Length: 409
Image (cartoon, rainbow, N blue to C red; front, side, top):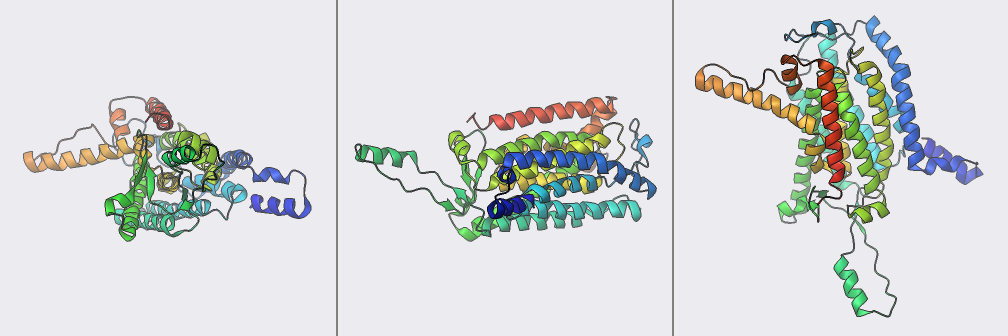
């Protein structure tokens, strides 16, 4: 909003200082500050409102230390995160940018799904909340929207490099003449980035023999899978005070860095990565999200004064997935979101092994003391804050490894 307003004022009236809103760096800094302030200042008012309405978490007795003390803690705190993301993005983002539009739609879409789940739990007193199949339908719907938009939008393109061999041939053929090489064009593509490979671009169309329709269908399926997997992974990780909030901050920061590099033609060329025009605007969204998460952590750290609920956890994971798809870095998510991956795998292994041993031996057996994995460590009598901080440290390590993939190939 401010970008468009001050651009008009600068062009129409040459207003001094209005040009500063043209800079992504300034708007990103403003977004993170405003997001932090919204989370901290308005978070207190939202917590008090939820307490008055008795919108508290129903805690099942799982035999975990300190668990029952959390009964009645206000939930649906994801509303704070969503507001802290959306307001700065609307204020400081370029609203005509297709990537910003996609992120806004994704945030609202997943917020509504998670909010409906929390509403059923709190007001309808159904502990399971929204049935899993309806969550999946919502996540699949978002994946379909993202995949379709990425394929059909004329604003979503990549800039292909002129092959080095072509440049060499031209220079050898005309050594004493000035030769103007044709600039590479923006093209539609289903390419993505593969970590640890020098020529690190994979075209999904390769699997379909170059058939555009099949390539689009494959890309949509990939988008659906990524959105569903990361969204549910974040949801499963949300089990301890400040866990998913703190784990997500390094993830969002790294995605913001990757968006800036991918959207900057000089840095993209230097690092030999895919140049994606206009994707740098996503840094504003990433800054707002990082500020929102840190602001929420003000109240969500141990002992939590509010829980994010599915309103927050489903949204965080899904938005991270959509962001990665926009900058074509979804294959980096198994590294970057390693905590979410391990938490999800712990649940699948536990359930699968339990069912297998029950069929084979007549008695179900377990791999972990309890799943998801963070509860396994609780059962081993490791204090909650120590588990959370160790998971944060691992998330920071995975974030650093993800950045290192830019150079190690």
